[in-house]
Length: 213
Image 1 (tube, rainbow, N blue to C red):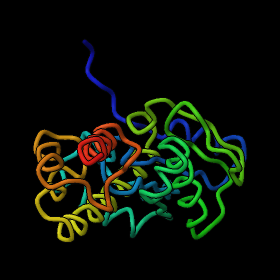
Image 2: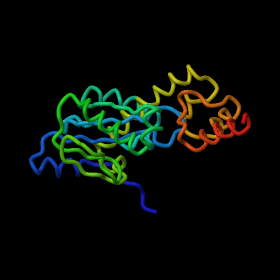
Image 3: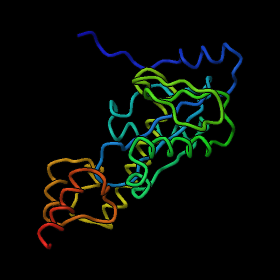
């Protein structure tokens, strides 16, 4: 298998070559967890101050993500948005992810001219033209930057939630359905921070209703 390539600036360069000035990469983090919000970020890189080592947040250590997050906040324009557990349960995770993306774009300090969005589907009601890039966080530097800021922001939210709901290990598993998280769900039950529309959580709630009925 050939080695994985690193993201580059080619998508941005093509858009800049068409006369578009502010190109924002957009990505979300947290579609798979059983608990916590989904968080998105939008990032407009300064072509003259792109931090070295940008990559898909999943390929980076927590320490390196934190370092790059600090640099990006000083060198790039960015916005962060999230959709709550209640919105995830009401809208479904795809629509909630798109809502978080729209909020991140709206939070940018300057209006973008073009959007590069991770995934194969574009959110509706975007403020400008956009293109979907499958695997964008591993192919496009602006999306990789967005994945880092979104990941760091969400991890911090989950650390705070872990202090409010001890025992589920969210400070280390970030709400994903790890074995320790599933075991804690069975033992401790469902919290207000859990996504009730996700099957492992729903099944526990349904089981409790069935037992008590």
